[in-house]
Image 1 (cartoon, helix red, strand yellow):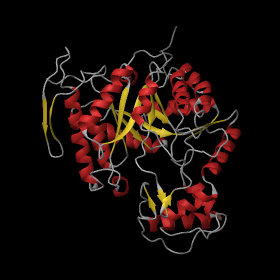
Image 2 (cartoon, helix red, strand yellow; image 1 turned 90 degrees about the vertical axis):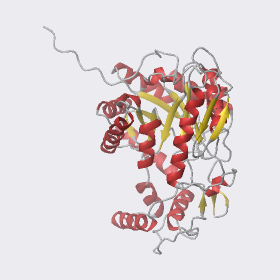
Image 3 (spheres, rainbow, N blue to C red; image 1 turned 90 degrees about the horizontal axis):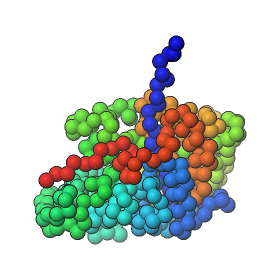
Image 4 (cartoon, helix red, strand yellow; image 1 turned 120 degrees about the vertical axis):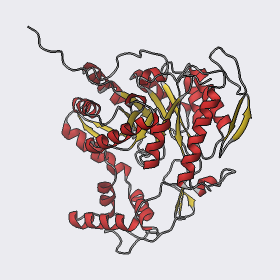
Length: 437
C-alpha cells in the first residue's frame, strides 16, 4: 500500500545581483576584483548560468556620490553603463536572463525601447528592464530635465514611459510588417516608425524595484517581477499578500508577477562557523569610517571628531540635504537617533557597534542544508517567489552558493535541474505578451 505522494515544492526563481556601491559589498577584501573589468561581470554571470539562475541583475549609478562636498572616498569610483555590459555578456552566455536598471526619469521611451529590443534580439530573448525613477536634483544635474519631478509625478511619468515602450514593441506585426505609431500623452508626444521588429520575448521582462505604496501599485499594474527588500518570513508574507492582492485591479493573476527580495547568504560547515563568518563580514562591511559616515547621514553634521569606538553624539540631528548627495534619504532622523541612542545605552554599544547592530543583517546564515531549507520554506509559505542574491564579494561571491546550495535545492525538487526554455520569460514561467493590433 502506498501513501499520498509528497507535495512538490513551489518552483523557486534565483537571480544574481552584481555587487556595486551599496554597503553590502566589501571592496577592501583582498579577494575582491575590479568593478569595471569585463572579467568580473563575466565570472559572476557564468557562475549564475552554471547554477541555472533566471537572470543576472545590474544596478545603476548616474552620478558619483558625494559626501561633505567631495567625491565619497569610501566608494569604488566608476560604474559602466548597464546595457552595454549586458550586450557583451549576451555573447558569453546562452540562457541566463540579462536585466539592466535604467531610469525612467532621465531617459526617453523611443531610445530606451530600441536599446532593450536590441538586447532582446541579440540575446535570443533574455532581456529585462528594471524600471527605477528619481526625484534627486543632484543626479538630475547630469541631465537636461534635471530633478524637477516630485515623487507622485515621477511614477506617473514612469507608467506612461512603460506603456509607450510597449506600444513601440507592438508597432511591428508578428509577421514582420512595420506599422507607423503615434503616442500623444502627458509626458510624451512622439510619432514615427520603430526601427526593430518584434523581439523574441515580444516585450522584454519588466522589473520594478521598491517597496513604497506607489511602487507596489506600479508593479501590480505594469511589472513582471518586483525586487523588494523584505528579508524576514513575516515581513515577506505580508508584502507578498498585499502585492498579489493588488493584481486583480488590473485584470492580472497572481502568477503574472514574481516577487523576489534581495538577500544575502553566509555559509559554513557548521551553524557556529556560519554565524562567525557572518559576524566577520558585518565588521568588514561597517569599517570605522563607514560607521561615522552612517551617523553623519542621520545627524546631518560633520562627526569626524568622534571616536567610532566611543559613544553616540549627545547632540540632536539637523536637516542638511547637502551633506550627502546621491544617496537614498533617511526617514525621520530625530526618531532614528533616539532609537539608536536607546539601543546603544541598553547594550553598552559604541558608534560602530550600534551601526552594525542597527543595520541590515545577513539574510540567510547557516550550513548549506539549513540555508536550502530556509529558502524553500520562504517560497513554500508565500513569502517570495524567489530571491535576488547579493554577494558581498566580486566576482567570486556566488561560487560557494552555486556549488553547495543549488544541488540541495535540486534534490528537494525546489529548483530546476536544467533550463527548460530559451527565454527569460520561460525561466520565470511568464506568458508571452499578447500582441496589440
